[in-house]
Image (cartoon, rainbow, N blue to C red; front, side, top):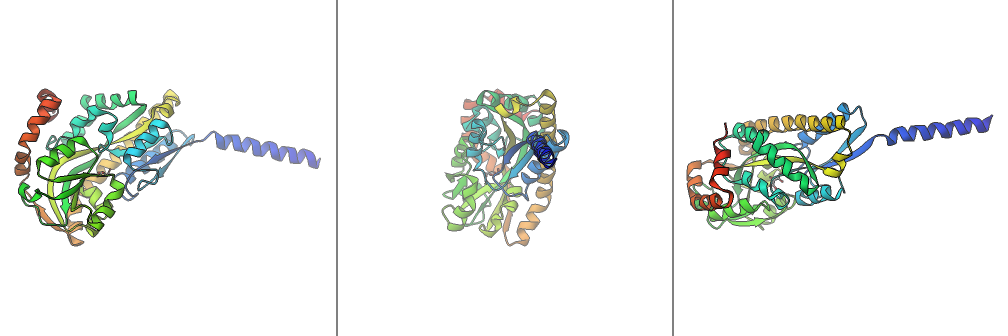
Amino acid sequence: MKLTKLLLAFAGAALFSTQVGAQTQMRINISIGQNSHYGVAVDTFAREVEKRTAGRYKVQAFYAGALGAERESIEAIQLGTHELTMTSSGPVPNFVPETRILDIPFLFRDKAHARAVLDGPIGQDLLAKFETKGIKALGWAENGFRHMTNNKRPVNAPDDLKGLKMRTMENPVHIAAYKGFGIVPTPMAFTEVFTALQQGTVDGQENPLSVITAAKFEQVQKHLSLTGHVYSPAVILMSKAAFDKLSADDKKHFMDAATEGIKANRARVDDDDAKGVADLKSKGMQVVEVDKSKFQAALTPVFAEFNKQFGQANIDKIRNFK
Ligand code: EAX
């Protein structure tokens, strides 16, 4: 009798563990902290995946580059080391060169323009390009318009940038353009930037208000210039091998969960853009409004180069998108 009970208990435990085993765990990594426009996106995505798949899939979020910086994280999903990542476009051209066109300075008028392009046929065609690289791109999110910070001097006009040593993303289009400003670009992973600013390895960096506030760069940077010199997309990426294993219904659930994550991301960027300047001023940053057209004009030779490289028609297609 006792033995039967024991066997039943074992059988019960075995049954329980297969039920637990039926839940597939996945991991998503971001380079910045949870309290950010990326954090809210991946948290929303994780919650929606779990809800929409009735708990059959669970996504655990890792913040502040816990599973690696952005480039490493993209490599990891190609290899299947972890399943998901959300990344800026910084290192993305090293994987899908066609996306470089999105990183051209002063390409988008405003966020509405950028979002319309990314959600429309141009953006969707670019997402499809990830597939041959072992990556399923679930959707374009955003980082926002990037602004410049530094510790040397207030930047009022493009000439003030000359000789500033600035950390840039590992993005070839940004690097080429910033050289056009006379900046000395120092590409490095985002996870190293705070320390580099603190130790004076670089004078400055450029990022949207969402990132500057989330990363507390006001603690290590004095001057902020609202250059808005480039729109910075972000993208939610999944290992194609992991995505292909999903049923047709679950694929849709993951895509829909990404859409919800992206909505939350964009709403947070809008909120950060509305509050960021006041917040940073209250924490002691000197903020300069600039004439953006002067910064755009300073890049005229670089734009000529980009027109050759990308094709004027392709750039105009994005510029004039309605
Ligand atoms: O994705 O590297 C960067 O400056 C990015 O804007 C940041 O990691 C957020």
